[in-house]
Image 1 (tube, rainbow, N blue to C red):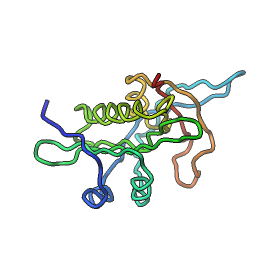
Image 2: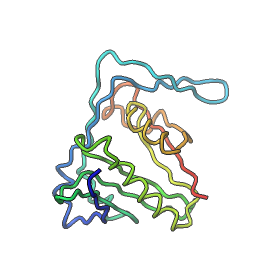
Image 3: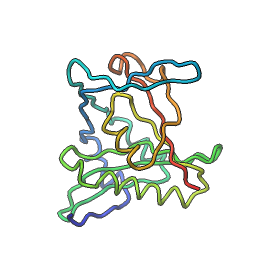
Length: 180
């Protein structure tokens, strides 16, 4: 494994890179959400064709400005490989991971794990009870990653996203990691 540095994300230094960042992912499956008597059941379903999701990063400067913790992973040549942004919500003592993205070529090399561990270290230094995040039922790579790191499904929303901006059947999944 190469040496990588986890450092704070600084808009003046990293903003142009962030605005050009390709955080897209592709998935050939989706977690379909079915209502059950006292909750929901998630069933993985193969899609007729692979779907690619792209994220607009136009409002990322606001996320960085509002953040309590930011990080970017840089390799030994100074190339940025991924970033994360988090904040602390005092009203419910919750740390929120707003963004965690890894360049496609750097996925599977521990960059996401390094960012997540840095975020968890920061969150443990707050009064947060847990680290909370949101991802999509279409983003099975992210769902698998968070589950493998000990996160559990803590909720979902069938109507969080604007239907004009998401793929059919796309819904929000919320995951939580206890810090105590």
